[in-house]
Image (cartoon, rainbow, N blue to C red; front, side, top):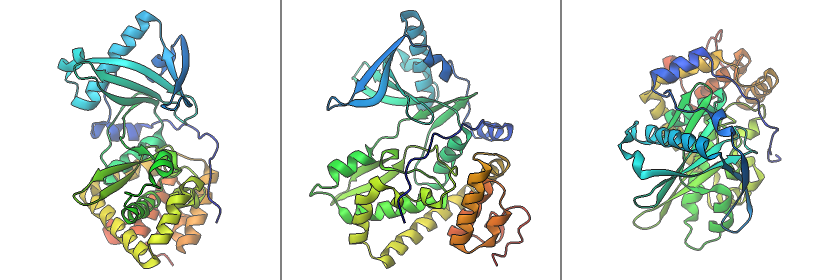
Amino acid sequence: MQPAEAQQRKKFFPINRHFREYLGQYHRTHPLPLLYEDLLKYEDSFPLLDRDGNDSLWQTLIYEQHLGRELYDALKRIYVLLRSGGDESVLDNLYIDRVDFCTFGNTQPMRVRIVNQYNDNHDYFYVKKADASRIYGLELEQLLSPNDINFIVHQDTLIEEHIIGLPGDDFIREYLPKEDLHSVRLAKEFIKFNERCFVRLLGDMRAYNYVVQVSPDFDQNQYRVRAIDFDQQCYEGRRSLYLPQFFKNNRPVVELCSELINLETSRQYQREERSLITRRLNFAFARIQQLRDCMCLDQISSDEKMKQLRDELAQMHQDHRFYFCHSMGDITFLNLTITLGLTGSEAFLPEGCNGSHR
């Protein structure tokens, strides 16, 4: 099978009333002192270069002095809201170093670099256009993955924390050849990451859409692969787009997995990851049911893509229940039900389905 590659820029989907109520119930919403559009009122910009002097594809924005002061004060208040629940006693220690604008991403994000002037420690956070499918992806990451994720929604503005790690493409290029790499542990983690993405249908995990976190253990390093881009949560129609193993720039890691992990062990790692996802699901079952209700009532992709994915998954799983699905939410949770082996009251079945897969 050929690796799936980049698709055209996706459509934005608004947050509907039911989903806003859900987000409010679980404290994902909060009034903000500025909106995404306010940061577009810049006067000029210049290319931001990386450490090697190459164009990073980000533009650093320049604001008129008075407006810039107001925006930077608002951004500092947003940061303390995101990080410390709004404790503004630390505001005097903080300053905004710069605001960078990325024009090639789906959400055209603003990346804010904020510095503690007391010790020069810096952090980042992101201001983006709020897209319903992306926010569903963020919620599923929180509920079904081993990772906590922090974000705030206000009207059509999304604030996200920075996820620390080595960008996947940099890791593959610079760290994969190193002698101190624990190859088996990395291969195991990539297999588990591949499984996490497919179970909840998170797509487009090309190497620059995830990071690798390296944690020293007492004898060898441990690795955690974390998604950082959630724009393609159950959006695309091709099944292969939900499997990181099929992307061309992930091929060096896939080859490593093939060399070091046999089929039986790979399936063992998949079962381990599914078991962990099932535990997380059971722990937050009521909340996940509410999220599923919102997703099933929402349109977060085109009818054409929904029908294509429904057909491909029905063929893959040999399960006709996919033909009862009429939304990407239905498909996502039926795929989750089948891959995790959920039955009875734990199963998420589309309306009108009697539960039998034959």
